[in-house]
Length: 158
Image (cartoon, rainbow, N blue to C red):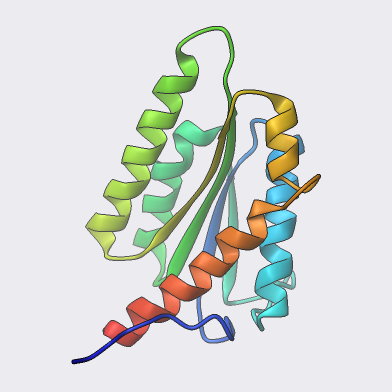
């Protein structure tokens, strides 16, 4: 019996793309910061001149899938991370955005056989979003760890 697992020890051999929604950038900037901190501490070059990391900004979470798809057409990434923050309001817009963003990201991942970490916060309030972006815990770090694990796992399986 073979058992396959991803590695958490190093990201230095991965090519990573991050797609970030600008809407609610008070939150997404903090999540991105946590994500980059984790990747850097695990050996990925996060400098301005890095050839192993690309960051793409989009207007909102709804646009994450098309940017992810375009990135994957452009270059061979081992893993992508999609980051956004959708906070429930008084209309059904929240439900539409989350539904389409999650379905779109999943479809792009399946179509290109590349893991895409779904790092879109879905919260009922700004306070909840802030707690997940660094006040209590920065989930950006967790999303980066998931990316390292899945990127290395898929590389090992191929």
